[in-house]
Amino acid sequence: MISVAEALDHLFALTAPLGTEEVPLTRAANRTLAAPVTARRNQPPFAASAMDGYALRAADLAPGATFDVIGEAAAGRGFAGTVAAGQAVRIFTGAPVPDGADHVVIQEDTTARGFQVTLTGEYGEGANIRAAGGDFREGDTISAPRVISPADIALFAAMNVPRVTVTRRPTVALIPTGDELVQPGETPGPDQIVASNSYGLHALLEAAGAAPRLMPIARDRIDSLEMIFSLARDADLILTIGGASVGDHDLVAQAAQGQGMEQSFYKVAMRPGKPLMAGRLGNAAMIGLPGNPVSAMVCGHIFVVPVIRHMLGLGAAPVPRLSAPLAQDIPANGPREHYMRARLDQTGAIAPDTRQDSALLSVLSGASALLVRAPDAPAARAGEPVPYIPL
Ligand SMILES: Nc1nc2c(c(=O)[nH]1)N[C@H]1C(S)=C(S)[C@@H](COP(=O)(O)OP(=O)(O)OC[C@H]3O[C@@H](n4cnc5c(N)ncnc54)[C@H](O)[C@@H]3O)O[C@H]1N2
Ligand code: MOO
Image (cartoon, rainbow, N blue to C red):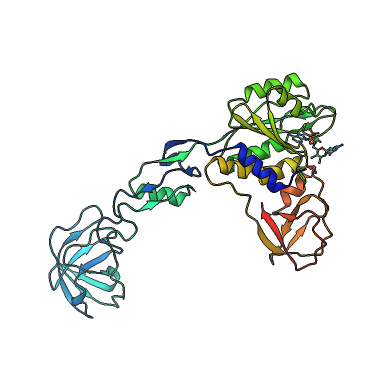
């Protein structure tokens, strides 16, 4: 059995960053930026008023001072003239500050009468003017790669960049296997259960930036598995679920090898997830996940998400770990790295659930973290820091 770190290295070696495509901003959320974005203008392009009020010369500011109002500057329609001593221009938020003016008094601090305005209150410390280029300047760049956030999209739009270059989404064929499975909503036979982790993995893949395709359930027969594999060949990644262990009906590796799969590894020293398998099948990487629902989901977090990020060009790195103090004593670990379903309490301390069976989706759903126990880690006391992965 290889370690989790070794298995991840093999998976990174089986995969590579994908090509790119261009998308409009309305399609760019959560995609991975693949080429830097360069501002095509200054923002603001002119010194702009930050408030509704009067633009005038700061040198003229004095309590009770009165000004001649010589015109108006609105957003989208500036004032063409120049403000001289004793003059003011009525101005609105976002409007260009007219030549000659270097201060905007907010209208609440003035009294207007006819074509005159008088300062009444405190006129404040700031000039209420946003400098030209104060947000960004033409030629400023946002570097790639990065996962594009809603704020990034607003920034790109302001930079007058309507389309961006992103990494192609990895297509993932997700293949549930097993005679016992029916789809959610169907009526299971007496010995059947409802396929679940295929749906959980579908959600995990979408959130990680992949384009998952849920394939029909492959039955525990070589011909059925081969048929579904043949439908999945154009994917970047083929993920099978179940049939990975040593039972008479665990036929995934045999069927994949019959289709030309070159195996990279089988079995990882971890709990849950031991019967994990990986290889290359034609142009696709293949990962065979164990069928137990929690095992498949944990392997999804620990292996599949980092592989998707690698394919998106976001680097080849394990899931980041945080640290929290133990809420209680825990016993020594066995020889496999243990990813314990755990919860963080309000004080930030972490405690593993008492039930760690890899079939218990209700426990996984109630967990907020995977507490990571290194192989053969000794018993640990309440208060000791332990590594965890947030869920
Ligand atoms: N003699 C041994 N038996 C087992 C070993 C072992 O080392 N020696 N390993 C155990 C471990 S650990 C795991 S994990 C499982 C993994 O087995 P498989 O990958 O072959 O999975 P299946 O047998 O097909 O299914 C296991 C379990 O999960 C249910 N399942 C499968 N697919 C789904 C799905 N899409 N949605 C919901 N549930 C699913 C399936 O019905 C089984 O109950 O093997 C142990 N055995
Ligand atoms: O590895 Mo199995 O995944 O322990 O349940």
